[in-house]
Amino acid sequence: MTGKVRVATIVATLLIIQTIAYGLWAQEAPKREMRGIWVSSVANIDWPSRPALSSEQLKAETIGILDNLVRLGFNCVFLQVRPSADALYNSPTEPWSAYLTGSQGAAPANDFDPLQFWTEEAHKRGIELHAWINPFRATTGKNQQLAQNHITSTHPEWIIYYDDKGYIDPGNPEARKYIYNIINHIAQNYDIDGIHIDDYFYPYPSPKKTFADTASFRIYNTQKLTIEQWRRQNINTFVKEAHQTVKDAKPWLLFGVSPFGVWRNDKDDKLGSKTNAGVTAYDALNADILAWMHNGWIDYVIPQIYWESTHPTANFNTLAEWWSKQEGCQIYIGHALYKIDNGAPAWKDKDEMPQQLIKARSISNIDGSVMFSYKQFSRELLGLHAFLTDTFYRTKALTPQIKSSNESIKIGEIKKKKHILQWTSSDDENTRFYVIYRYNKKKDCGSTSESHIWRITSENSIRKENGERGKQFYRVAPLDKYRKEHNASKKVKF
Image 1 (cartoon, rainbow, N blue to C red):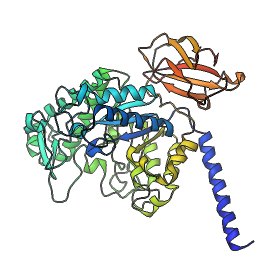
Image 2: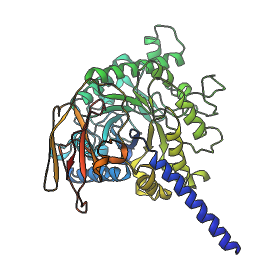
Image 3: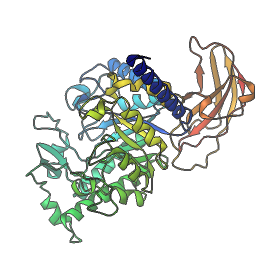
Image 4: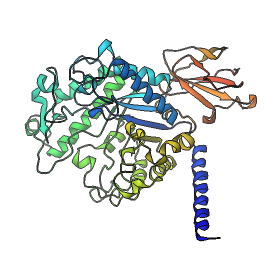
C-alpha cells in the first residue's frame, strides 16, 4: 500500500467513524429539546434585511426564514422586537423602529404588525415565538435620528449617556415601572410564548468612563449599600418584577434571560467557574443570575457561551458543565454561529460547533441550545447545515415542558379529505400546537416517540405535499400552552 493510499484509507475510516458517531447522536435525540435561534433586528442584522421594505417584502422574508428553520429542525425563535426603546410591534408608548420603516416613528404600510405576523406564521409551522426586548438600551449611537415620542424626549431625566449610547437608568423605580408596562402590553396583546431579555443590564464597561448614576444612587439607595450592591439590587428587583408582570398577564408565558456566559471566576468567588474572564456578568454588568435562578425569578436561562472548546481562559466545555450544575430554572446553552470560520483557529475546524452541540445535549440538566444568529445560515458554516438536517436535528422535537397544566384536551373527529387531514379539538383556545404522528406500519401506531413525529402545527388540518405518496397511519395529539402533551387521537389511514 502506497503512502497516499494509506492516508486516503485512514481519512475515509475516520469519516466513517465520525458519520456513525453523529448518526448515533441523531438516533438519541430527545423528544423534548430547545432548538432555538435568535433573530436580531438591531442594525438589520437578521430581519428585516434592510429598512423600509414593503409589507409584502417583510412578509416574504419572514416566511422564508421560518420555512428554512423548519427545514433545519429548529422549534423556537427569539425575535428582537424592542432593540432600543423602539418597537417592531404596535406600541402605544414607543415609536416604530427605524430598522423596520427607515425612519423612527413612521408606521409600516397597511397596518402591518410584524410581531403579530411572525407569531401567527411561526405557530403554523410548530415554532414557538419569544418576544426579545432590550430593556435598558435607549440609543445605539450619536447620530441616531429619534422620534418625538422616543423616551429620550419624553423622559430625558431617565437617560444616562455612556460611551456615546443612551441608557434608561435601572436605578430609577419609575423608569423600571415604564418597562414593566411595556412587557405587560406585549404579553397581553400578542399570542406569544415568552418574553426574553438579553445580556444588556448595566452597560459593558468602557475604559476610563463612568456610568453617571450618582444622582439616582443618592436618592434611591435607602439601605446604604455600596454602589455595586445597589446596582445589583436594582437589576434583581427588575428581573423579579418583570417575571411577575409576565405571569400576571398570562401564567403560561415564559420569562427568560440570555446573560453573558461567565457569572464569576472562581478566583473571585468559590461558587464561580474555573475561568479567568476579564468581564463577568456579576461584577461588570451587575447581573446576579444565580440569584434569579435560585429565587425562581426566571423560567429559563441561556448563558452566551461564545468561546471555543479550547479557549484558554473561558473554555466552552468548562462553562457548559458549570452552568449545568446551577439550579432553579431550565438551562439552555447559547452558541456563537457568527464565529464559525472566523477568528480563532479553532473556529475553522468544521467539528467545533457540532461538538459543542453534542456536548450540550450530553450534559444532564441542559435541555437544548440556542444559536446566534439566523443570518449566519446564509453562509456555508463548514457543513453545519447538513449536520443539523441530516443528523443532529433529523427528528423533530417539542420544546421542554417547564410548567404543569391541569387542562384536559381531547381530539374529536379526525377525517381525511383528498390530500387533507382534518380534526376537531375539545379546546382550541388552550391548544398551542397539534403534534401529528405518522406510521408506516399499523403495529407501530401505539408509539408517540420523536421518530414518528411528522408535523407540528397550530392549525386544525394539514395537507400532504406533492411527492408524499403512499398510505400511512396518522394520529394527532394536542399540546397545550403550558407545553403539556395530551392523549393522541385514534389512528386513521390516509
